Length: 374
Image (cartoon, rainbow, N blue to C red):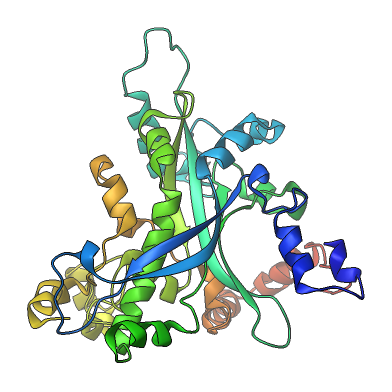
């Protein structure tokens, strides 16, 4: 963006750059700028249908096609490093004891099941090619862009679990693909709401609109082209499959369409919040906005939002809540990793011998980052 170096820079220069083909987000580079419309509800006010409710338009949703990303990657030479076939890695502890090692997605039972499922599908008469999985790991998070101020970026990106984590973890491989940039509800949301209903929205209505925004953005991504590829494969050979979605807890709430820290706070199971302190106990191991709407949804802490994943993938028996796995990276800032590491140190001290020295020796073998030391 050389116009930023010009002392005579003006706002019109940025607008011109937005239409310039050299812009990475230009349509010729596979990016679209779309607007979405969310329906605005109001408490104690009925509409003939959801489609008849007032709408708010939110522009500036930059996104690209997941199908195009998959096609581009599988046509690239980097695909030669992908594991198309699942397999097992075994550790022979003794002559009588063998342990399965799960360190990559393509070692997992889920990958085996998906591979067997797509290869059981009927082939075209002239199709003797093997069906393979494009294992998709989605990720979304808000990224701060500056050390000072509140500039941030909320993006969705994609990695392929066919690729070894030791390869995809290298920055030079460029294994992370940006899929979409998520806007937030506009700053003048309440002004627009007041202009329609003559009063400000409640916190519940504002939260509902945040849920709707996330689902409409995913509706852009799970479009007709992607759904055709999901059902029939890309060139009848590569079948995209969602294997995991990593996000922090507030985003998981938006994606899973459940209430924040409610009766069932976990997006993976139906454990009650009152039972959380019992986790790990012997007893626990043995037992491994109308009132009508609240009563209907309260038992599983759901919210009255149509989930895009469920709507688009229901015919494939897609299990939405298994998509959201634990993300340890988001635990660092909460001190969870520090507590876990301290506990591991206690175990090593209790083990005695040279266990601590062995850990130090392994850390010394880790290359430094920049000028830092380990």
